[in-house]
Image (cartoon, rainbow, N blue to C red; front, side, top):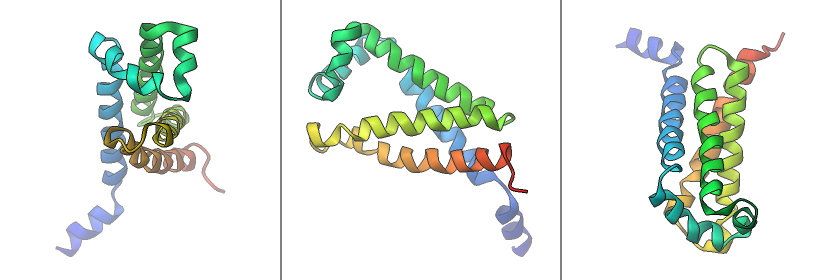
Amino acid sequence: MQIWRQKFQQSEIDIVVLRLSVIILFFVFGNTKWFEFEVEGLKPIIANSWLTFLYDLLGFHNTSYVLGVVETIAYVSLAVGFSRPKIGLLGSFLVFATAIVTVSLLPQLGFNGFIFKDILLIGMALVLFKYDLNRAYPIQ
């Protein structure tokens, strides 16, 4: 039992599972942005928040597509980050930024569990960012 505990403690399974979890989440949500149901689902969230300027600037569909592109860049960067930590930093930053923007909607929209979950993404992004930062730029 002690050997298993030590192997677990020395492993990076926590980071691998965390990274894969965020990749899967952003893969799913990023890819839904290309479909009409997601365009419609975003309307009440964006139209009733400070992000409404995006609709004026880009329209409904293009706003959804831009969000999809950002989320796609995030999950692809995180996936590449398994072997190239500097690229992983970009993915972690994008996850952090999108989560901060989403959480900033809470005061205007009231409690929303779908948005509230992004608080977890902020923590996940910071853990991955620190991990990749240490891999890309080790302290001498």
